[in-house]
Length: 181
Image 1 (cartoon, rainbow, N blue to C red):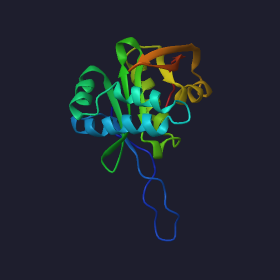
Image 2: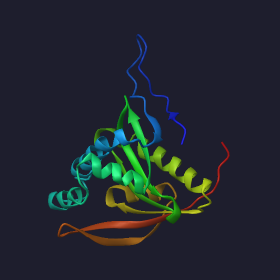
Image 3: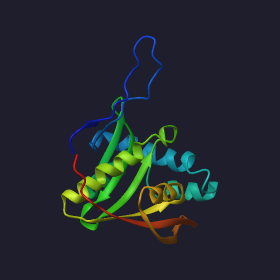
Image 4: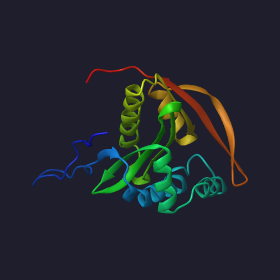
């Protein structure tokens, strides 16, 4: 994936400060430690409105907080990252052959600014480029409603067990259509 810049830069004299500049690209091994932190904080802080403390602790413990584990996941999945000042602030893991978005996480203080949506756009484009016409995701309660508003179809809820806790999520899918740009 080529590097794409969204237009968020430093403000000039007399201008209001703008949001940080976000770049999107394929993940590098150096992003793995940041991915671990993004995941942990997105779950522990970002999901507070949808899941209790015990649920979030079990969810966060389901994946290691070590860079080596996330670097290994980069070998398993096509991983796209959003970076700010060279640091990963959001990421998406994609299983292209199965048309499945495995994970999507954004640093909590940067949530609701379009970072996750932009990562999804890049993922959908990659899937189309590989001849995949339908995307699937198992979305947390935090993510599901927003995806439905963006055209994803809700196939129903399911419950998964993480560390002895039952967590609700929604199975979603979306038919992909090529858009000329």
